[in-house]
Image (cartoon, rainbow, N blue to C red; front, side, top):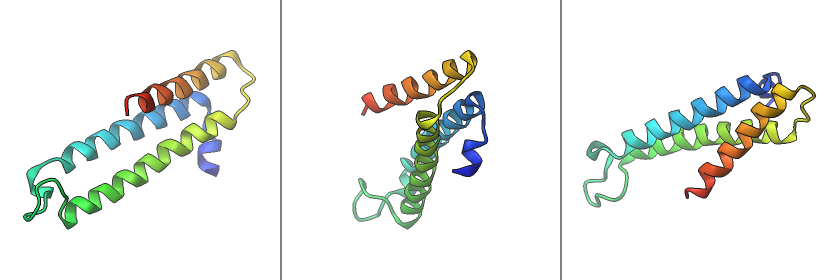
Length: 97
């Protein structure tokens, strides 16, 4: 969290966006048949479970970036704008679920 607090709002936006993309890539890889259980195609095998764990870690970093942005009180107009994009983008992504 300390490292995230050192980022300016633009960097925090970029980091959050990168975590979102990374999570989508991991999820897509996890959907491949090679990560499905042999006994049940809708469940992961052990390697697929590790991918899910990795995706949870990435999602945690994304949430942490949002939490830092939410707690911040930007003084510059540019920082306020990037903070808005972080918060509204995250809210929109959560509305898709």
